[in-house]
Length: 115
Image 1 (cartoon, rainbow, N blue to C red):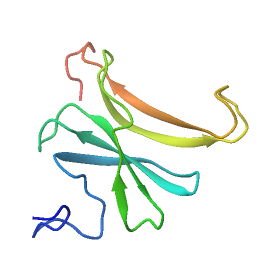
Image 2 (cartoon, rainbow, N blue to C red; image 1 turned 180 degrees about the horizontal axis):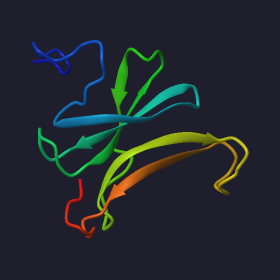
Image 3 (cartoon, rainbow, N blue to C red; image 1 turned 90 degrees about the vertical axis):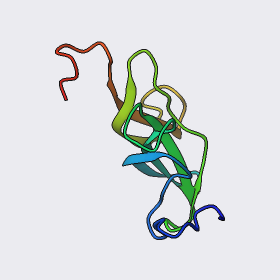
């Protein structure tokens, strides 16, 4: 069946091509496009290790999924956060840089799995 045309797939709200999609994060208008970042388990259709997926839109209705924006590392999975355009180079990456902020849920936290 054609991508995004499955019988029970939502057609109004964004959905990832495959597997688990969780909280949307960091909706921002940047370089003429809307950018949506979202928690995404690329390994399974269930909750688990989270990446930040990425999609873009010109009109907030039709979305094109992009390569994942953030990947889990030694600090753990990528969870809730935001995105901002640094118009005044406050962070030092250049004027107009897109900055992503996220919560890392480390695997080494004590007590174990506090959430």
